[in-house]
Image (cartoon, rainbow, N blue to C red):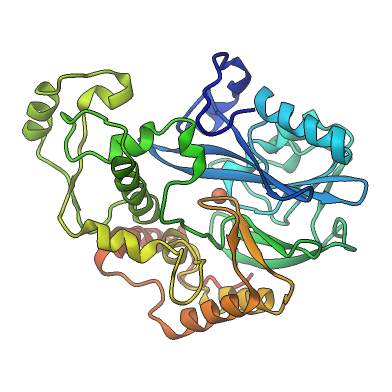
Length: 397
Ligand SMILES: [Fe+2]
């Protein structure tokens, strides 16, 4: 199992053969970091995923339940990941339940079939209204194992003596639904969320210690710059990745002209696959960092968590009331001590008062704006509306 600062010589255990189903960086080799979040109770397995080195952590959480383990938010089960899970099973009992708590998150849905095959005795739980695009496929074609797949709420809920399940949605997105089920572990006060709430740390998450290439790539000003590994470059790269991942095209980013791009690449001392042959089509205006700091939630004045702007503008844009209702239901869970979501940073200390404060701030502030860095997201939404791909009213369905 990988740990920060170590790089296994044999990377065959990191192979993920099904990567063409969702061809995201780092493609067919997925290094995994395992961490214990609550001693003997909660662990996480983390990998990276992204586009053009805009890579953020993606996480599966393991919770100790009576007589075994529950897996929340599936990850590609590489040999390396399975080695870590087998070690936990040897100590804490078998994997009893695998939970896909989102109807829309393809990055969590794609690995489910392979993960379920690795644990043939486990019950698979999925949120209702699963869908696929561009072709609507039945559940068994998505690889959900017949005979042991259950739908959360419709067919019951797993480990209710210890876990509280709180649904968000479903929200009608036109092509399908957004439906996510949060889970509170009463033993540890851990709130598990897939996509609907994240904590964005001020420093790069530890998974980047396995390979900081995405940080170093984006920490530069030009493609001709070498990728020098320093804490400052890593931090700069992380903050830019945060802006890219949340807004796609942040306000203070510009694209150089094609001749500038070519001249820059040709003057680089090094051009290789790792630095994308010195092609770097980004230029950042001087005050870009202030915009990144606004998104970073550690030390955030209201709460150390937030809804990612991309979801606010494209999923919850017309479903603020549904989102608020879910937040306030979560905030009633007084046992909550920390947030572990499937992306960005974990675990993040957070309590129900902070959740309520966040709900208040959501209620009071301008929702899903269209200016500044939100412009591209707003344009995408307008286009989807014009083409009748998304409904004009998309509160709960
Ligand atoms: Fe996700």
